[in-house]
Image (cartoon, rainbow over all chains, first blue to last red; front, side, top):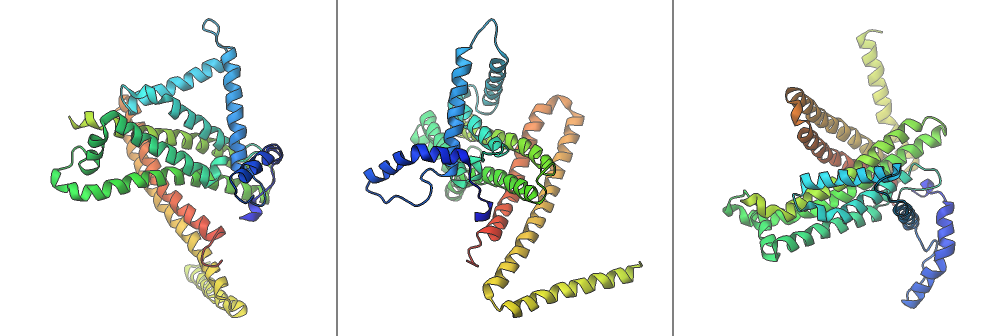
Amino acid sequence: MDKLHHELWIVNAINAVLGPVVALGYRALGMEIPDGKLVPDYLAMLLVLSAALVALAFVVRSRLSVENPGKLQILLEDAVQGLYSMLDMLVGPKGRRYLPLIGTVFVIIWLSNLAGLVPGLMAPTSNINVTVGCALLVWFYYHIEGIRAQGLGAYLKHFAMPPGIPVFLAPIMIIIEPISHLARAMSLSLRLFGNVFGEELVILILASLVPFVVPLPMMMLGVLTGTLQAGIFVMLTMIYLGGAVAAEHEAH
Amino acid sequence: MNTRSVLTVALTLLALGMVSPVYAQEAAADAATTLGQWSIITAGFALGLAAAFGALGQGKAIASAVEAIARNPSAFGDIRFALIFGLVLIESLVIYVLLISLILFFVNPFTG
């Protein structure tokens, strides 16, 4: 896998700036400073993308206007509206309060997927650490929200007796349900990672055979799958949230 | 070319293909190398099988979704949601096989 690696100037620049700070942190914790880059590629890319998003948000906020909205404002309002309608459909009437996390996850995953197609950048989501991080965040979030919405006892009861399952199956369900919940975290992370990494690999191999024009159809496909995978990640998150939060209502 | 000669050529090629790893094994006489070759072959076949049957399943799902939309166009939104959800779940199985193949290609734990 080493031969697939290439130096990125933006990662080197970030390492030059943040490297001494991270080294200081290592020394303060009494740990040995590891060899090589102190800020790995994917973290540097995530930092760049987050900074770009925050800058974009500030620019849009400074130009907000009700009478005369700009094109960018209309576009972002449409995106928020789309997420609202998905939340209404999948989570239920109280779904809109989950927009902050859902929207953040969607935007950062979408940008990460598309960053792999820009020369000089890499997709942070093609590293499994990033996708596992996103999946675990979402996983713990929906469990915590489920406990907050239903109370600990009622939420744990659904592991033994999901709505619509007869009581005598409870001893089996209490084994199956935790496994299926763990499988959700695994499938969320591996699906995103496999898609983005496979896409990058195909583009890289085609580009190493013929550097011009030939990888273009694959990059077009990369735009499609990147968008689709970000949407799917968020859609599954909403379905899990809906299942955790609104299970009470379905039982009636 | 008639059928028999095509068959003969194919069988000859197959026999040559069977023989050549044996020569490679004698030449290299290295267990790790043979294992590496076989794991590449296995990964390719596994990915082919997964893609074939995954595509078959997705094709059936899309076919019935299109049929359902044609019968009842007003249910387009719900059907599209169910279709995408199902396609994602089918696709993730193929992605698992892709990951296993990539592991066998690049970070094979057995050949070192």
